[in-house]
Length: 151
Image (tube, rainbow, N blue to C red; front, side, top):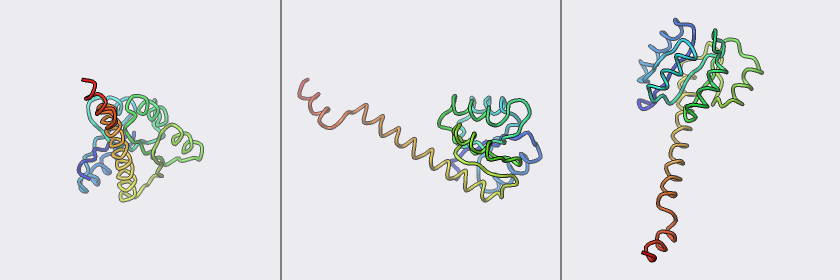
């Protein structure tokens, strides 16, 4: 999936560097951030499709970061990732707009599969938006005929 741009957000720098290398070997374009505020800054500067977001981080935690991402960048798909999963945090993340939820340590192939599913979901949504925009711009065939007859 060379077209997919992914961002990993985790306060564990060793996890970030190792996972980034593994994903890069599979041809995936990956950015990294060590905090929620840093992730939001990167999203301002880059067109990221999928964010893999750790739930437990100091300062701005994953749920707060998720809520900000969905508020500011609603098209970005977010997959929550944690070593401290609880049913409550999983439900809260999903209710707040996360596309999915993974437990650490997640196998790299599972992480890629979930990210690809989220990316495909985003592409489908973008296509629906394009179709609706075209319909809005051009109107129905009857509207177009009516407009041409009136002019």
